Image (cartoon, rainbow, N blue to C red; front, side, top):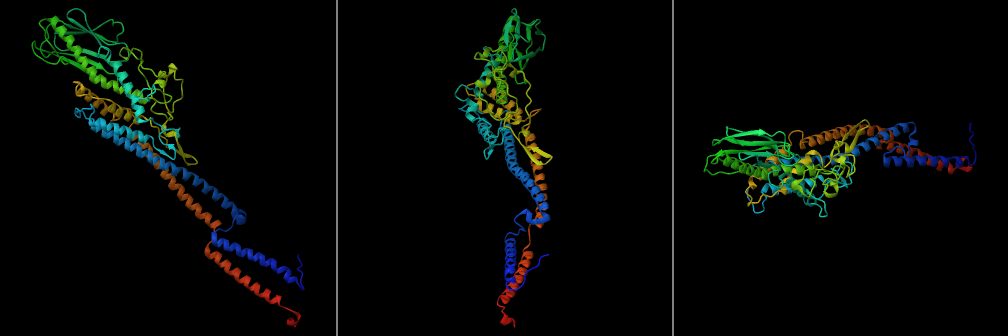
Length: 526
């Protein structure tokens, strides 16, 4: 129990402390009126401080998630737009490259080819998209530009590393062979028998079968096979064929497609193209000689047209399959026309442009290790190269790589189109163009197991949907928590104004009483 002193001066000693305390309350209420906050520290909230700390922690966590979702949403939108634009460019080129689109030009390049060059450059720009220094199509290495420049990819770096055009040329020479027959060899076994054999290597034509109609030409498979051959046949002129009889050679091409050379017998003295017919001679010996000449002419034309187009496909696919840890396959050379060793990746990274420089999801292996050619490559998913946390137990992948299957296929086809030339002086230009157009159109259809642009777009769309759903959910939760926190930490203007008015009245009364007491004397009191 406190006994408060009274008597002369006792009021003056006690009242100033009360004035100071009341004035402090008044200042705090003015602060609350200005800031709308109940206190400046958690301690002043009393028992509500635990609620405030918990709510602030939850809101801070939501802000962090929302920030990541917002940034990823922008990146994902740009990635989805790039994939959609790529899909349209590929579709437009497929429509451009119809088989009857060949028109002779002084440059040897048709309008669809010139457009393909622009599309190639556009795709490179799309795949080089960056946001605040982060490259969106570089996988985990987001600080590394994912693709080389157009000129370097097509023409090489000028310092010893080959580009796409050189790889196409090397493969074409290896497939064509020194005799121009697609690495097939023809010969004779007596005056009435023509022989045909392919090579025991990975280049050129591979004989799928030989057949004939009519009784004039007998076809037999050679056994045992000649040394260095995978398949060999004998075409024996056992009697004079009739006009219209046919000899057909089925050929397998390096890109997995097939073609055939069909030679039709024509009557003596008639004219025709040796590439698709042979003249019935004066006797079986002359007919066999004519058959051999026509067989070589037919194979030579097919080698310069369909085989050439197939070679471009193989070379372009090998080139664009290349990445930092997976070099492209190269034909051993420089004697490409007579190469027998299979294409190899060993050492290719030192001599070949690596068009994709980002993360490829493939474990590194020594560039001179022979295992490069035989190892099974299973790169990690491109989407998992960038993960967005949607909630404590939920995340989604939003990563991308410029060397995903669909992009590689599209770039390879654009690259083939812009690299080829079809001079008006070459009688095989139109057939070679049509062979190229057929393959390009087929590849740009993204058939079979090839990754399709729509798959990438769908995956991006799914991720966008997940981001949007999480954003709405978190924003709704944050709004609720913010409202609840406001009730704990904030004050209303009306409440503070009422308290200020009450305190003003109290202070005014105290000042008046104090003033009266301060003037009190014994005379006045009496």
